[in-house]
Image (cartoon, rainbow, N blue to C red; front, side):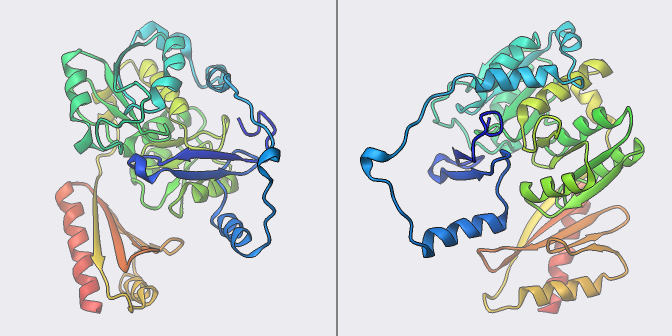
Length: 370
């Protein structure tokens, strides 16, 4: 709505996928895109160091309510040639929706109605009282997994409070895998003419595999939506996003958006005419591990990462965001925290056991260097 209303910027009040006590402000530029790290620091510097004139209480300007945003956004999605409402309508999908009592129930309802889907609502009252941890991870989604099975639904759809993360549940009540939301959408979009797909360094290798199989290209950015968008623009990407279920489709706008993700995924599912579980089987199977190691606050973390880079210099290495080491059948990504004396360790491999073992090996390597 920022460019639609020709505004100078936008402010989103949200805690994203976190509990409500973390509510804060997300700032958008005139394009409706998140401001960069540098721009954010510039704003803080202005606020802290320059004389700021505050308007007196009787001259605060004005505001007006705009009630057509969801209607306009939904219409834009339905008008995209990549979204095929008639094919979805013919399938008459039965879907369980978990909107964690936030905005998802409001904004997805018109889209589902237009697509002819029967929706079973679970936590769709926008009260802000989250019935479970709002991050859409398997350990928080037992209720919807059970509901999909008991209702004999075709699938379950889960969004976080600000509806920029999207996860699917298959007809058996099993997680499709948040990392595979972007993989499935890219599979659909790239199958015709190839193209470029972008995700961040900590996202699944499955996206690269699918893109290259379809004759496309894959690029990885530093972690963070702003960085993904920057690389998508540089590479003229057709599709991009993050492995946390965030879909960015530039034809609509450069921001993570579960609504376009739902529309593209359902089009893909309807065209393939398969179950969600069968669709998942068509993609490479990867498993992720997440770990961290506590460091001495006085330690030179950059120096430590440099030593890890040197140790594995024979492998394919990226240093645009920490150190990522790509092995033939697995990878590890080391990122230092900006707020704590720790290194976060992300791994991926063909089995969970291998992913966890790789993480432990890297921890031992770091301890040896220490």
